[in-house]
Amino acid sequence: MNLSSELIWLCFITLFTSIMWIPYIINRMYEMGAWPALYNPQPDIRPKAQWAMRMMRAHENAIENLVIFAPLVILIEITGSHSTITEFAVVLYFYARLVHFCAFTFAIPLIRVPAFLTGFSVQVILGLSLLKLT
Image (cartoon, rainbow, N blue to C red):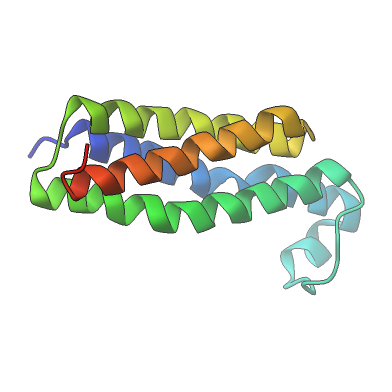
């Protein structure tokens, strides 16, 4: 069975989201030591490095948006609503989320906000495509 472009890019964004935690956990191990970092830390313990805190928030945001994006892509697959628009949109979503993650981590709001809005726009486009409104 061959995967559609939309499902391939869904896989890429899911894998990317699944590894976003690695740098901030390495930072946590550096700041706290390996055992305390691997032990279940209290949720109110914030990293000293501001980039790590921003990266955690970017990861949370990526998860929150993946919950919206993934069902839309899966519904496109189930309904056969593929088009050049949906193919382009899922690629755009991947790069928008990549840029958002980096811009959030490095505190570049003039890039972060447009990247977020691009990802949101893709979600709207996919939803409208499912409703046959594009």
